[in-house]
Image (cartoon, rainbow over all chains, first blue to last red; front, side, top):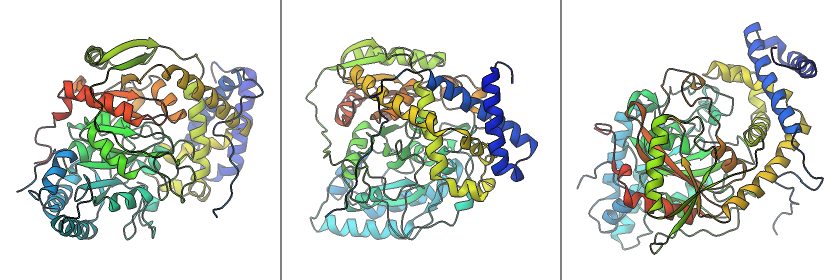
Length: 71
Length: 465
């Protein structure tokens, strides 16, 4: 995993273990290699998102809307 | 009178209303073209001749009796095969769902029925609306979408058949859907017009869900004016879809020759092909005759990353039955059989963070757009990709899509129209993106552009013959 920090590598390996546990029986080595790239991309994306500083009041969009059946 | 292909809805409507063309003749001609030429473009999943001819006969009788419903009355169209139509399969473009069927019509289909339009075909699409991470055109059980301008080029996706059927003159308009790029991309690739409405403008009841907070239904057609006519028919609230807005929409076809204020997002052409940049520069020169053009900027935040995270997590949940059951192993594209497994690794915390970044994006996009009528940019940074290569291997394949991320992430409307000829003699495109609920403004701008250019009247030679 060139260009990946130790922390990110540990995170990628932990998440890969989760995927192996769930789907390992149907994934061959080539598929697992593809998935490792995809997980690495997801971890990089997560780290980019975590760098964004938001205020406590910056809630998710779309916001939650209470439901009431009509009428 | 035998109707010719490539006649806009507005012109066909005048012929139907004055009984110079019969809706049955129109439907018969479109069915014949779809059956004969649809396979050339891999554009059709299912023809609907019984339903089409019944609707056309009904329209003909109503027009003859003086009960003209409006500009879509008796006009044929096709619909992306993720919209449910009772009595026919609805495959979502996916081999494991070839025989899937629903017993209701999608709301958009029902509304077009009420307007008198005539459904002739369910059109091909990238499997599961492209939500599994496909990386090349061979990602549909109907085969790769073939571009009407070149059989060596892709038609774009995921509304592949909607783009090629309109671009090849098989139908005057079609319905597509967009989560991120799936209307604007095939419109741009095929040299036609496409409208991505504001999120919530059109009910999604009866449509495949890929991403509940990103999916939109919209039309592809030959002119911006035609897109407005179709949106007028399909927009509006729907008790069956709580995300459909209660805001009314009426298409305004006249704008009184107004002046426009256009913005160009800094970075909007980064990574674009040279010919695309040249056509965009030429388009800006036309737009300067319609108003002003200025450069604007958004804060540098990971917009694409946030929207991609939201899309992947929602798609993984929406299609979890296919993933969990292993039936994704029956999909056409090899990468679609594998990549979804990786999405289990996206953490809840990061999904919610992406939704929070999206809130900032909405406010920033609206701040920029508040002083403008539209942001303009190339519809795609490259012409249609080769049909036999991975997207990332061609120029523009790895370019950012800031307009697509911000437009879809913030739920903003955009219209794409043809803007010239690019590499390999393939069409280029120009997009206008507006504030939420400003479809009339961006359609007015697109109409004004089309009134000064003739690119929308240029069609692939021999495509419909």
